[in-house]
Image 1 (cartoon, rainbow, N blue to C red):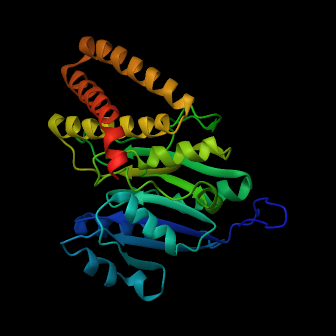
Image 2: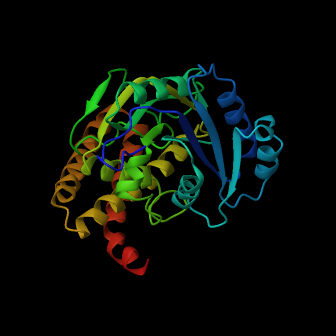
Length: 308
């Protein structure tokens, strides 16, 4: 928490909050929750798991309310009836009590020491503002998408490297939200610009000067259901739209660095497309879908943001 007299971050971490936004994935959510509560907790901190039901029409509410952890207060239920991942994440933020707030998804299997490692990193560095960790495939046969596999520990400087953290495994100190605000509800899953509310938040935190770290010891496993190339291509297209929307949003706000990002993103996508053409047809399809989505996201953003 902040020391109001000095503006410094208090070094001691006493409680961690985990926010999981979910929509119509009751079976997957049950597995995710069981894995979270099966961790080997060190006992050095308190924790709470906040599940935000984002207008689900399946058995999501029953899964949460009947879970054993609900009875002792470790598992909390929040309903956000307006559809949108950013809205759900913000609803979780509104009730979170921890000094450190972690986000993961309803199709994630956390490592047995996931929260302990998060606690250790933020306790060791009182200036650490945000953290990303490894996101590995949970099962063989899944498309290699929505993962972060780097095994090298990295201190992130500047705003040029945003892919060190994704929504499945990202952690913020509370002060980040106090300074830069909540997730942009115009971005993220459930909106036209899907898949970019996490990138936007990371960018805003880095631009505000918060220290960031990629810690490969903070590990989760992504049990997504994309097994076919068609599913992967569809996801890449949505990621592209989100990426284009995120960068154009900041360009319209007069951010010249975002303008440079747009140029280099398109350049790298074009060169990746050429390399992919010689590598594999599947990779070529994925890169092409991402590029197409990116350009559509860029073009649509001025009109959509004005309407919203």
